[in-house]
Image 1 (tube, one colour):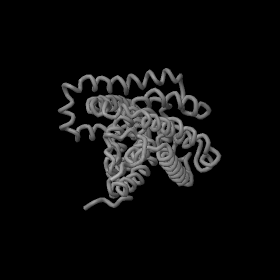
Image 2 (cartoon, rainbow, N blue to C red; image 1 turned 180 degrees about the vertical axis):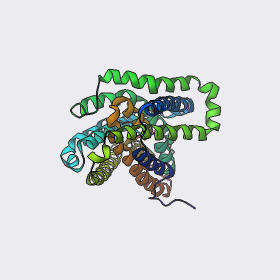
Image 3 (cartoon, rainbow, N blue to C red; image 1 turned 90 degrees about the horizontal axis):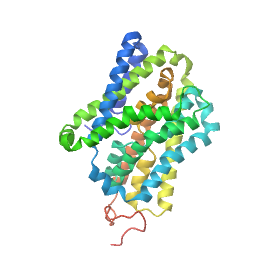
Image 4 (tube, rainbow, N blue to C red; image 1 turned 45 degrees about the horizontal axis):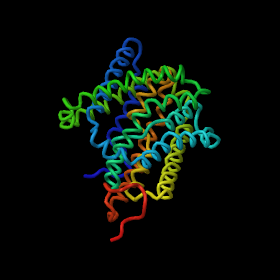
Length: 339
């Protein structure tokens, strides 16, 4: 039986369960040190497997579509940060300062990879371009996100250290394993492709570990005493506003610039989404341990909201008649082909 559109998926339920466990049974002392070490290993393994999974052929297939990729990158790393800062008079009264820091961090993150591609495919968009665009966003985010955080969150508690020091830590923990996976793809790529369940287990398991460790530290610091229930409701409203504005802007810009329908779909899904898989490990590196829980809470809520909304959009667009223009021949401009 199919799951209703607006019910949380199993992973979201697991995230909620992890937060509850961390709230009731937070790790402390030697257990916290052990969990932190295990989490670092799991994150490195996660990015290693992602590197081994990513097909270079798929990247090259969409790499020439530079106008689409440029618009997605502008949406991800320019539009969102501008929205986070410009809407501050509206957003900040609804949440606590710590949660607003998390909103700004959310705005600096790269796009998702798996879900952007999945929704683009479901909606009959330009899948090769989505693979390339989402992957490029994820890799560039390793360098761009820490720099943006240092600019946008410098007056808030939690972000510390030189941005170059942060970039160095992220390169060692995320990029080096990813590159190693890419280099070893000829040897292990087929095995990874055959055992996708392993990648899914490591993917979700590493995120759950980070969330548990982060919220354990946050609970030990009294996070639930500093965030009122009204602020959590305000956070949901803030995430809905951010996603709605991002969807409207990307849709308007893609149509106004003359992109084909398939490319418009790709731009909307890749340019309006934020990566939980990249965001939580980055937060662990960028922010002080006691502040990570509050920082990632906006991202966790945004993740579920974007999945529900984009699933509905993808199903609706995918059910429409496919337009006559071939996706693989799209250059990103021009009207639909005549019948």
